[in-house]
Amino acid sequence: MTNTVILISGRGSNMQAIVNAAIPDVNIAAVLSNSNTAAGLAWAAERGIATGSLNHKEFPSREAFDAAMMEKIDAYRPDLVVLAGFMRILTPAFCAHYEGRLINIHPSLLPSFTGLHTHKRAIEAGCRVAGCTIHFVTAELDCGPIISQGVVPVLDDDTPETLAARVLEAEHKLLPQAVADFAAGRLKTDGNRVANSHRNAAGQILLA
Image (cartoon, rainbow, N blue to C red; front, side, top):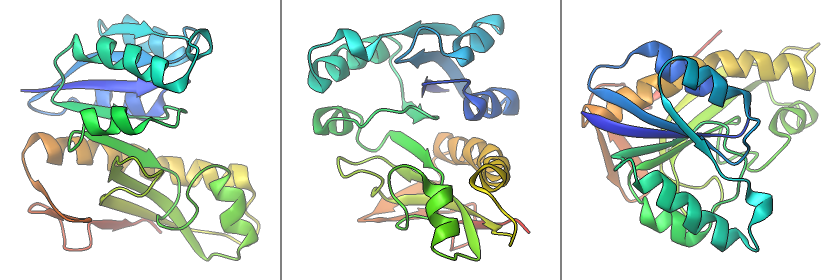
């Protein structure tokens, strides 16, 4: 059984997608947040999942917050930690502590558009496709080994909001599958490349 802790900052729609997928051999041990008002905490609690929060604003430094969050996470003895809309830049110590068992979903086709405002930037750049990327987390922001990517078209009349909604649909399909693949031991990392014995060589889903 893969003990899994999910970190969120808001409503946690990707967290909900993982929970609703009822993935075999995956136990959602807890949903934690950096905000005690995150709507996803109430959703998880209603389904009997342990929840908790730490307000990052109450800590003197990023390092202090991450150390406290690590202690909270480790209480659940996780095999996997999933960043599902966790809006914090993590310290190198945090990333090193969970190396190889910390995954993130980012709303762009990495390595393009790391950071914020990805949909607006994709439209302004004239991209014909956009999407999302699931990757292992390293200390370098949005640069860890890529597990899988979902691709959607950018339409001529898209706004950042309409494109975001289309990408989110891809995220909700891709992230539960990545968790399932991790739990089944199908992911093998070699340098910056992740091989998946269950998926095609590109590890990519094209959504028209």
